[in-house]
Length: 499
Ligand code: BES
Ligand code: MG
Ligand code: ZN
Image (cartoon, rainbow, N blue to C red; front, side, top):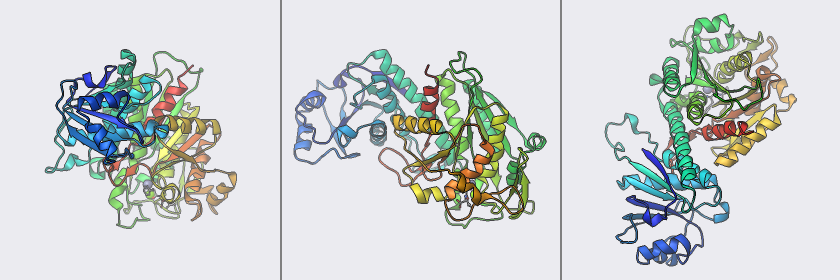
């Protein structure tokens, strides 16, 4: 799908359908709404005045029109709530609602007027991201009832803006939106179609297509490196583990010499819990336990095209977590690459085990800052639901920068504390640490475990277990993988490339 940025007046944009943002208490008697209202013979004023449409967030009103002064034959009003709270998240949702709604009406070319103040390039980017993300569907494996309709083009309209700037924003937004959908697609694949080997192959394709370097460590190489923690998880499975290492290197460096950001993402392609088997209910959802890895690959896919002037490593430890006669048992002791010994209390706390060696390996490769992301704990859903992603870590500046990047793109993060006292909960009687810290503060003790491997390298951890999967669908998003954090990480990386 083509994504175009246009500075033309809305009524002159060549598209079958035009979607425009409308705010609470807005009347059709001035500005853009007035022009459109005149073009459609007063129908917009009608629905607003009759209060048929009150511009509540997500509300829509849809018209077929035929007017010489408006190119589009269909107009969609999208309620956006209060203008004062119209920020990146609302712009993204507005644009997603526009493409989802108009596609369902078999419209092929869509113009979107987000009507936001501020930097035109940024607004165009934000709307383009939403427009592309709105089109993601879960129906890949359906043979009937499939969404066959497709948009040919989306034009983001920012009237009067600089033409080049709007197009730049549209291009960047398309790249970020497509990369987020790429992450969502990987996350949605069932375990049978998404083994560590297949995930590594997908990462290879991305590297080849967009020019990243890639290395994939196999089991023997990991054995040589002493990654006993990661290998302890994969032991129960017939599928061999993989450690994916992607590298983006800019042609022009703006970072201080030696600085290297590493993104590390949990890649459990199916989490049955292992010997500490999970209950059957909802276990099928554990196909998305590789979303952290998918987020890393999607983010690398985006920055390979956006080309910020800082180097970035993307590391994804990938394994299945299954029970078998070879599987690690509760009570077993694993030795991580760093030499630390870990008593496995519960084989279902496997994410931290694969991340431990991956974080240590990121340091070995020279990472000076680490951000890991993982569907790590059910406890985070109890604490924050599906609204905020938990963020914890050892470096407040890094954490603040991630949160600020999230705010900029409309993704929410909430910091949980990580005081030293929590580390007591993961002390083991017989090994250095254990992989479960008891019932209390489950999300924090999981992070406390990772901290043992990040050590003094500035580090932030994102627990995306609650936010990576959306249910139910909304007007702007299908049910299923949300692609959370890709946008934030891209923004974070681009900010760190600013002089
Ligand atoms: N993959 C799960 C966490 C999870 C739960 C992700 C629900 C998405 C939705 C993780 O491996 C896990 O099983 N964690 C355990 C840890 C416990 C044994 C300490 C959990 O949260 O119950
Ligand atoms: Mg588990
Ligand atoms: Zn898991």
